[in-house]
Amino acid sequence: VQLQASGGGLVQAGGSLRLSCAASGRTLSNYFMGWFRQAPGKEREFVGAISWSSGLTYYTDSVRGRFTVSRDNTENTVYLQMNSLKPEETAIYYCAARDQSRTVGISRKEGYPYWGQGTQVTVSS
Image 1: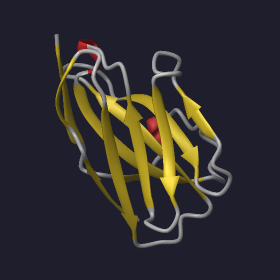
Image 2: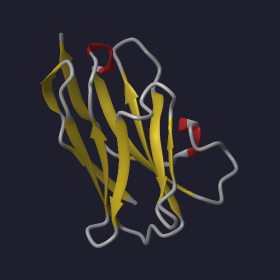
Image 3: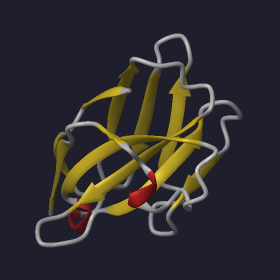
Image 4: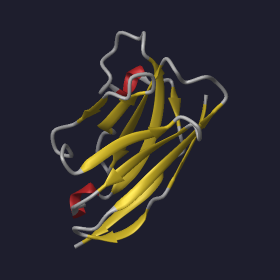
């Protein structure tokens, strides 16, 4: 599976951005697609995920209600819509993919064997 993330940029606090993750190389019907972020000097952390087959979504508490993960089956693309962004959410955002059959929890980065290259999101105060 090859993943290509895009859509990052500079935005003011309270603003919005939509990230995209284009997937190729394999049928994704049995996959979870996850979004993670990594700020300088910090661990990579889970943001949200979506089941490609069911469309069920999962979020970390800090973004629930502000961020939305969605998918476009025809374009093989996953999106992360981010609203009401905060300066502390400045990070490199990564998309990742994993088979749904893996037993590792979906918020664990260790469970995702496929990663995109990351896209920088900078939120100014």
